[in-house]
Image 1 (cartoon, rainbow over the protein chains, first blue to last red):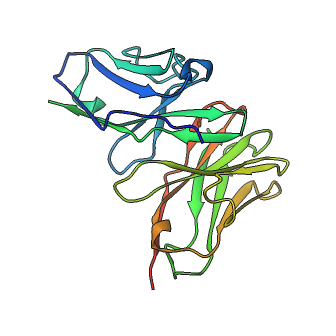
Image 2 (image 1 turned 90 degrees about the horizontal axis):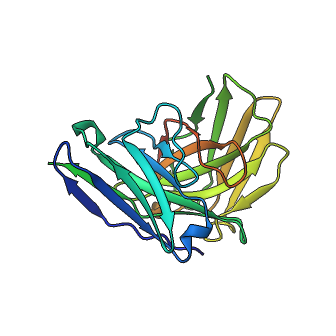
Length: 108
Length: 118
């Protein structure tokens, strides 16, 4: 199975930039999706296919994917961005779906 | 707008079968893929499996021997069965939609908590 590695936690002050990474072997060859999960709520898609934003996702959220690391960047972080963030890919060769372990974003 | 709603027992005894249904409202179950995902308390997300609206399935290898997903297009529903449950199967269970194979989960249900306990 394909393993995705995320840092357990990231902390940032309001107005600063948060960077959340997702590591995987040759992850750049796969489309990476990112979800935001606030406490007690279902996950919400914020970025798909590496860098596409669904309607409703603020432009402050962006994604990139290169080599063995995909990155979710949140500019001008707000208190409401405090949540858990998960990356996800499909391993099309085995039709297996993997989630990263999640990163808790704390806004200081 | 499309909404998903999970339903089923909130308490299941060890060794019994967990059964959940996801009802799709505001849209059709075809021609999409549909998934079950779970989240144990305080832990991360785990993919359980998918079903295409015509009935083709694929499952997480770690659960494959115990899991079955089916679809009922006439009722706009799909269902999950997980056999021989243990306390490790206690989790919030989510259903979700995948608009195109290998794309993201664009719509999620609110989730339903299932406790496995005697």
